[in-house]
Image (cartoon, rainbow, N blue to C red; front, side, top):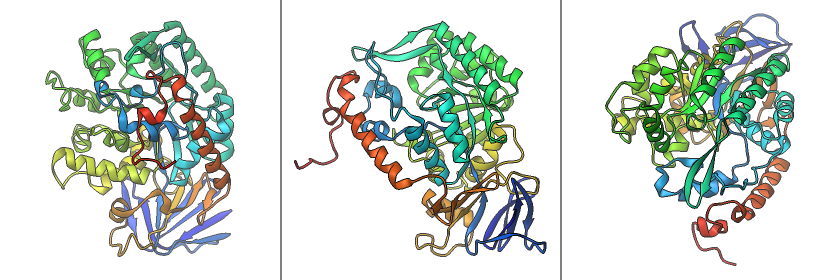
Amino acid sequence: MRTLIQGGWVVGYDGRGHELIPNGCVVFEDDRVLYVGRKFDGQVDRRIDAGGKLVSPGFVNCHLHPATNAVQSAFLDNLKADYFASNFIGYAAPRRGLKPPRAGDTAELAGVYGLWSAVRAGATTILDIGTMPGGPAAFTKVAGEMGVRAYLGPAFRSADYVFDGSRIMWQWDEAKGLAGLERAVAYIKEYDGAYNGRLRGMIYPGQLDTCTPELLRQARRWADELGVPIQLHAAMNQREFHRILEQHGQTPIELLHSIGFLKPRTGLGHCLFHNKHSWCHYPYGDDLKLLGDAGVTVVHAPYKYAKMGVALESFERYRAAGINLAIGTDTYPQDVIHEMRWAALMCRKADESFRVGRPQDVFDAATLGGARHLGRDDIGRLAPGAKADIIVIDLLQMHYGAVHDPIKSLLECGTGRDVETVIVDGQALLEDGKTTRVDERALLAAVQAEGERLWHAVPEWHWSGKPLDEIVPPSYPVRE
């Protein structure tokens, strides 16, 4: 079926970069874009009126952990001070010998909620960073039936984080890491290209400080042999930076460079703590040059770090070094528009300049940058031959006011709640604000119930052994 989206601002692609087409149109048939321009005179089977709205390529959310948001929302304001804003390590690692209850350990709850939250906010391609709640087969089925485009694979690592008393420890099991890599390779061989090519395989080692160099070398070899992208959490917190420096005499980026890990189609999740970051005080070498020369992608999730008082230093400095930048949401909210605004503002704060963090640069990261990470030229853009991954954003709302430049207005005023239509591979997952695949009311009720279960179970695994409200007091006294 041939569909015409008519009117509004269209974000087209001229072969070099995005361009704006006022009162433009997009035509797609089946899973491909046929035409992008001012006017289309051919026959169509269906018309969508987008007058006054923004017609955009779908966002590429390059770093997402699907789960209910109970743990993240409850713990982030009271992390252990001696863990230097190391986020999840400071609250999610259990006492030695125990395992915390996982957040909605089913694909039908955590999987659906995590994926749909991202889709609902305009992401048409999603990278689940090895989380796969419910297990690989069940999660793959959920992603496939939801209709999203996704890059999937189970995570693996050589060590787990555990608390021993009140100290973080690394519990090593190298055989476990190698077995996990074998499972990841088997998953890719079975599922890469599933659901008419919407689901692709990807290799996801866990975190740099939980993987041996040999495990990372083997993961790199398999990614090259299978021809799939790879992404690793690296340079993500201060404990990791100093641990790697102490063990190997190299920064995290230097270590990855020395073992041949840094190549195109390689993503580094977060990657804040390069040697010249103000928290590191290590002026020896040039990590950013290593990343730029290698063609690596840094996947930036600014809001997660802003909540801990940490900033990438900086988005503009990384761009100047030739580093490809992409955007991910990591936890919650799974809203790429929200992340783009934080990326721009945190860049301006880091550089103390209002001339950086430009809207077009962060929009590029959320579209073209993500596509470049995956080695694709058919997503993250609207052009003839590209995949029909399209979103329509309603700019006709009071919080936008007068719109002169829709990208600037989106970054200044927008939110994922303004996304009214999401089309993936030519299929509408959200249409005129109405979902086609998910019962949102029932899903939210299940998420709240799961949150209550998780909060009640905190003393069973947390290093303090205390109830949640003693670890993280409520904002105001709660009247009984």
